[in-house]
Length: 451
Picture 1 (tube, one colour):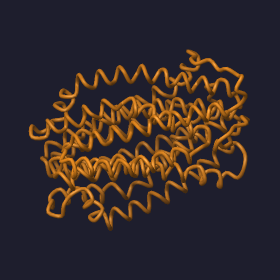
Picture 2 (cartoon, one colour):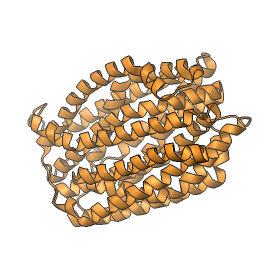
Picture 3 (cartoon, rainbow, N blue to C red):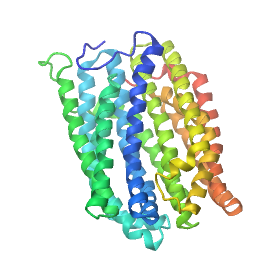
Picture 4 (cartoon, rainbow, N blue to C red):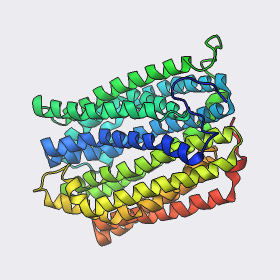
């Protein structure tokens, strides 16, 4: 095992319950701050500008998820391989995996930035963006795309900290940056009189500062690992292939989910601004829960990868049980909050006179939130499969969920209106959960090897 400085943690030894809870709770806190960071734009747009601005930000958000998918895939590809090398005690290859990821990500960012800026209007037209929202949606999206380099480097850096067993450092960065983002959002909009561009530039600036600090902290941490004289190669095509085995399926999975969400958004847009605004607020809350559970899953993935690298497959099973317990508790609490107090939470995004939008937002939350506990089983089980590098089952379960959700949204919406769209979520989640658990029980993941 690597002898390391800082707050790196060996997840291959010690009490599993204590390790999982101490490791994943800061991750959960980090993602709550990350979601606070993400919803700040919608919150300020809805409260300080108006429902049209809220709808424009929410409309653009579905497209930003495509770029987030690439950043997430880069994060997962590097973190799984870094975790496995860390667990196996192979520090030179671990360092090369990190630098290889950053070099490859830099090339990818340039390509995505150019494509994004060229096709912004076309993407917004594809999702039936109303004419009155087109200008603000395009403005928000363009500014977001300018900051892709910060999005990628920040996610990769914090993912690597997690891979080395350090969940506290990402938490500290996110707590500071998300709080600052809200303050700068309000400053730009209320004090400087800016509109949607104000909330977009606030995110750009805060994420930029966070990215630079996170990468600088990671460089310092790497210098503390092992002997300074030991030089690791900056780039390796062999290790890039290992990273790609995990990263590409993760990118495809998240990208197809994003495309599916865009298709669903196009159906929602056909119902008008009130439904769009209600959905924009409710989906932010929903994504906060799902992404938080996914973050617990990322912790279980790092735990699984370290133990897989060390050959400790029995510890992985116990880690999965603890991850299920934690995610189930979180799912139940948030579902109860949304069902009984959702109206008050939605008021964070809109004024009390937006009754039509409020009705649609509450309808979504009451239908979807009781099934958070079901999807948490899928997410945690997927995390074990991903941590071992067994990516095909992970892909199959996610695509099954997505295809059902998109298909049912188109089929049920003409019959039931927006409620038909909301019902597609629990049905898709249920199917994906059954498939993921079936693959886990077969046990092929125990024999998979990437490094």
